[in-house]
Length: 357
Ligand SMILES: [Fe+2]
Image (cartoon, helix red, strand yellow):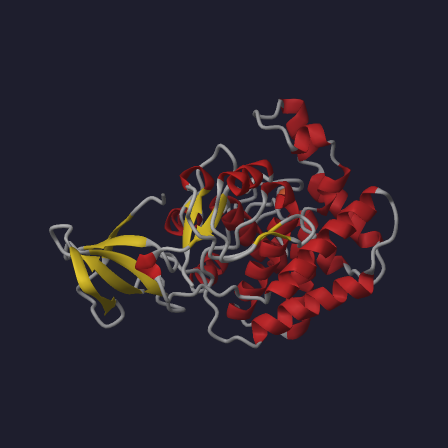
């Protein structure tokens, strides 16, 4: 199987889907292996799918594995949606089910001790809030593992991360889905979602104050310039400081209609540049060790003039992946291609990442 991520406006008839695409209820919209035709492309546009994985001969044989199982991810997305809808309708939340999903996420991530996050999963935009929440939970737990958190703390982190934006269920949709900039008044309303989230969570059975504080403090800044309370430094709960980093990273690297997605190395620059301001520098440092700066499938140019594709990324060596060289210095195709492992070649480095499509 391959793995090339292509934005939908670059997708053409005849291309083959490499990874199944799921809809808001976890149902398959388009299965892996299907050849795209105009009907399918139109359907993807209608579902506001911004990008898909397609098969590509240059990356044949490379597989990108998700860090949690597809089953757990779909379950978690469905459950987040169900909980948010129930809260909106003021009905009860199935806490046992929530606990099961949280346990599955933490257990699966703990059982894999060499996790490095590649390109995050592709999602239909109308499902964005829920899959974003699951992504933030997954990224937070992996960061928590890197920081040496114990099992209980990881489960608290997962739960708080999954529901960090739950206060948005009580916000008017006209504000949540507004595409133009918010007016000052609307922004004031929007800024209430951490407090609303805190109120919702602390009233739920078996959800403790630690979890609720993640929702309350996920927009606080390390330098004290955040909201709602303007807390600073370590006064902000440690779990909320983790979720803040993961939330911002996921937002920056997600496809959004009409807005280019940042590449991991660009989003990481933003995180590093804001260490000690927006973010806790120690947490950013831990986060950098678990993210592939050049994810598998990235088209790169090396300082020796050749071009290739990243085929493997290593934990804790984010700038030194393995690269399959496809063209020589003059841009001529090399056959057969050969691989350079940058961890073995300190003098060689990546100097450019090509745009997709
Ligand atoms: Fe938020």
